[in-house]
Amino acid sequence: MRWRRFLCRALSVMTGPRPVVLSGPSGAGKSTLLKKLLKDYENVFGFSVSHYHFVSREEMQKQIDAGGFIENAEFSGNMYGTSKAAIQAVQAQNQICILDIDMQGVKNIKKTDLNPIYISVQAPSIEVLEKRLRDRQTESEDSLQKRLNAARIDMELSKEPGLFDLIIINNDLEEAYTELKNILAEVSYFTSWEHSSLSELPGYFLGHGMIRFLVCRPCI
Image (cartoon, rainbow, N blue to C red; front, top):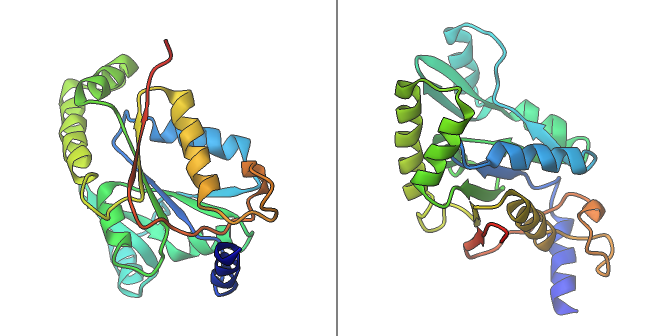
């Protein structure tokens, strides 16, 4: 009962749903998990994409300098980022905002007061990741090698203490999806403590103080 009262007091000072940052290299299954979550719980979660409005580099930099972005990065000469307005638009609907962010974005958000739940989705090995990328048949060899190099860095950095609240090793999609739903339910405040369905989430999260590794094994 004390723990429940503590949760209620903590929630009383929160001004909106706590966002979720989902990160991981291409081929880890992050986007597939995200699509399933948004499809199954469209009234619970809202998705904030990187800011892709076409503006000049000068205008983009001006907005960044004015503090209009929660995170921003530059890749291949292009600037992109996630605007605060995009997150606020999701929160205004009392939905949990999910951000699909790369490792650079994760570290940038760590410097802000956004205070999201950080979840990393990883493949069980670089060999498995490479096979997944090759099976897509959408990459040139040069592009594939760049993705693999980025993935190696991502996999190593994800082990950094305190960077993520949860790491899911995705070796089976359905198990990984179940684990993702379970952790979101576990760290959430339910309208009824007897209910354990993710559909009961009102959208407020409390974080864990320790990292958890979840290995989703293939079905036999």
